Image (cartoon, rainbow, N blue to C red; front, side, top):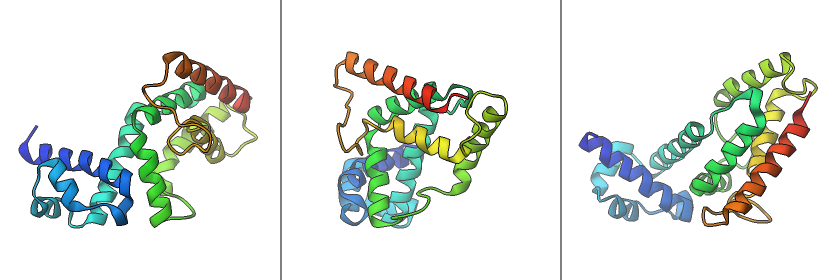
Length: 187
């Protein structure tokens, strides 16, 4: 990895920790810089501002989840389980999204609506081929699958799962989640 790319990677990782803990307003570039072992001048040269760094961190975390949990519209239960696992492994995304909601976008789409279109189009095609209940709008199906997958995420009102939880607990949650999604969206 090129030195610049390695520095940017360290800044994104350090920024994820800092902003997940403190949000945009409370996050400090001096702490990000120190943790990443990259000067503040370089941080600003790469990202321009603390807010732009937060945007880059959030985008990086979302892309990490998308890579870890690709949508297979003809297997929504599997998709939901992959999202569950990704949220357990990457709790920063939920915290970063929560901060973005608190400090920036309290309503409406958190991410660009266009980012959802490939997924909702894939779900619509799966509805047309009889894999998913066609009575529900594809965007609503996608939103509900995400919500179900995040039942035990860092944003949960009842219980937050961690990688340290017993594997039997994770297996039980995965099985319950897959069954719920299968039953909820079956044609």
